[in-house]
Length: 293
Image (cartoon, rainbow, N blue to C red; front, top):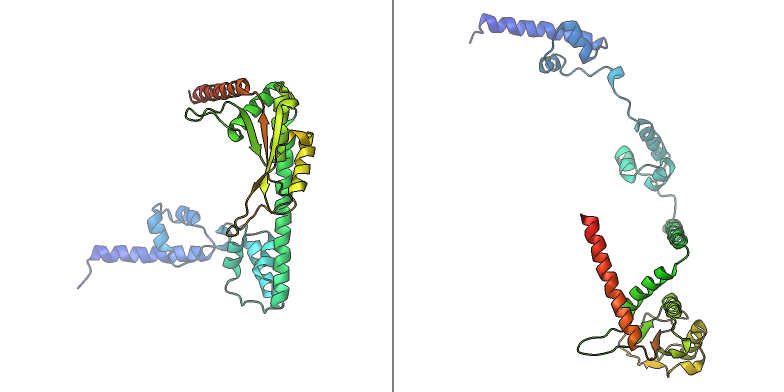
């Protein structure tokens, strides 16, 4: 089938333009320079004219990772592992894998025992760093608290008691102040709060609650010294019977059971605590509503 004269002319014009474009492209012209030189402002046509011709080197944008890539490949050729390359260059494992995956794996130079020892050492170092970060965070948080005002201690104590103390129920009236905890810090904070409220230490009675297989005399001595109370202020220790089917986790020298602190003649004190707690709840709701609006 014969082509029409007009179509043949257009095809010839395109081929002529393409020859010019390719020649100029090979001389190092960019697409923008080709456009201005040939007066062709149709991007689609311009791309078709130089199709298959690579852009000049000078038009390529530099890649910040090209240098790292070459370093990674050189280290791989020298027999370095992914971990070693990652540590040396400070780049991610995914990048290292992408850059060197076509290179042969280095021969193993360590025995399995040596490799395990190195891995263990690395893990121990990670744990050390993690522990240091944990310690530093806690220390910074502790310093940020500073001194407590009497009002702040009062509010802390109310919240502390309402979380860990006994509460009165409509079906089980218990208007008495009894606090139970195993944390020495909680115990000393609670006692400081009672001092703030003017509760005489003579009104306090203590009971140690502990597993029967633990060091009972040692625990009794520990709590007695912590609260600075004579043993006469302590009721008989409450022992938890051992269940042979249960695997105990609260073992070791640090396990001292729980301490129960009961305040004698404390019905009025309990009512004040409960009232203060609901005052905190109401104030919190009002503050939250204010923050939302």
